[in-house]
Length: 554
Ligand SMILES: [Zn+2]
Ligand SMILES: [Zn+2]
Image (cartoon, rainbow, N blue to C red; front, side, top):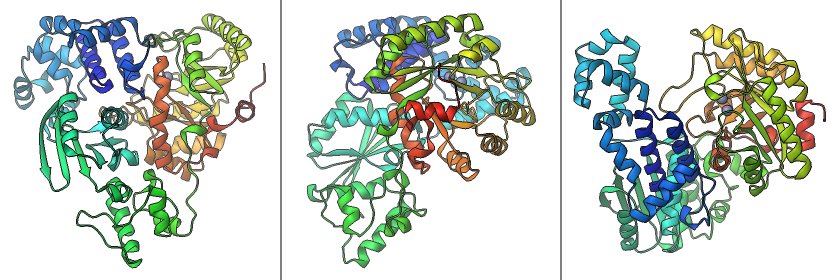
């Protein structure tokens, strides 16, 4: 069974556990599912899967042995079907589902729709809630489903792994270009289509497929479209370039190719023989354009004059600057995180547990922080790489003060400040963050818009004012790579750059050792925003980073 399918099972169990009120175990299953999705190799190839929560591990072993999950079956037998159905709609939270079920006795999706139409929801709850439900249902019922980049990359990875022995296959389209939300996953391949059909229909949950020319398009059980374009072997790279897009970029490429005397195939790719995409661009006298930049903006002009900047690469990242341990709401111990950081060949890792002000995340008190600090010292003196930085994800309180006390301050190497408890107005949220930026305490603003993909675009906050304050006071902005956050987004990273924000801080917001691997997909959104390595704090060496953070060396 492939990682995507295993993770989907774990996520379904998570939902059922949440509906049954078992929040802690639901959390463990969700975090384990994300860790499975972040793996590069099939889970079954790992000699042990101790990096997952013990309960999730046990259930995976059951699934692999029996072909189904006994835990899922027993939960499904207990929980009314409609609850799971409503809770699977993105944008409707489990609490809302239980509220609807318990207050209005809603027992089907059509019943819910009727209650919206008759004004019942508005009467019992609020207009806002009604609007939120209306939008969620509209999205759920629309035929094209969207996926966030992380899930799309993980899905694509499972597919390419399943087919890697068949011949050349590569992800193309908007996933390859690193778009944060996509509505289909595109591939190019050059082998016998029977192999493709067999593998995809047996290993993935496919509902139907269609063929048109060189395209086979599958629709999976969740409504996700998988498109496979077959290419002649000799034009694999030329086809990969074409099916990666974007349309605007390709229009420019075709003009250049025609001017150079190349012909265009019926499907649309340039009939140019190349051994790599690099060679393809070079034969058109162009500098190589990384997929993330192919949006038809100014990349072609720059490629002609050989002046596309060198973008940040995964290998430039020297450490993770946003990591939670079991001292707050993380599931891994600091030693385990250290071990995983060593595996990733990191030079440093900032342990940034929540501060005490965030009670639901088990925030760390000043007293407990002393213990955490001692443990970090012990690990640092016993083992070297990665060096553990003492950090905190401090609450920005309602009055804009930062939730760290003096004793804690004396220990800290690094502080990120964030809002997790929001004010009612745009003005108040903005003022709180600006005050924290001016305090001189925080180095980084965590997940600046607090968006949750498919749930909310941003909290009420004037992001432009935050960019200006950050730029003026030398505070960095986070690009948080937790899969449903991706905050700042590509568009806002570009805007922050225009406001002269000097540095970005990249963090996975890991709550489990496996989450440290989110970095590999997340780097794409930085590249898409034309970010160079010099603009990212965690591409600097430990010594340089310390200078940038202006902290004393302990
Ligand atoms: Zn946070
Ligand atoms: Zn966090």
